[in-house]
Length: 121
Image (cartoon, rainbow, N blue to C red):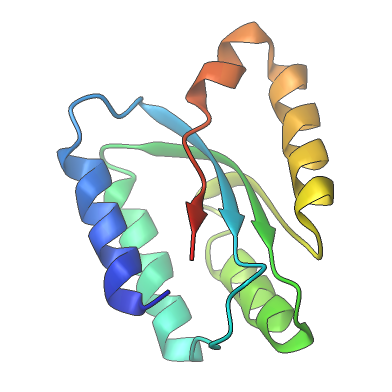
């Protein structure tokens, strides 16, 4: 996944007339082989803040299997802590799905409809 692909995804969200007002996110980076630079993480965090005019981000579960990527995504978590209702980084997809499912279930039946397809590499 490249920085340009991530930025294009945010542009698509803003333009999508069917995009719900609130989104919960499952970001599966389990097969990602490249490592983002800290400046790229900052750029993505900035883009999340810009998109918030159109989309409210709820819960975010991220899967990062390698130690290095896990650390970089934890940096993303710090940069975006005020932009998401809650973010957590996981080592496996089943853990992330279970955690996200618990959060959505706790919010009630309407919450399940806000989960968009996960952005995968």
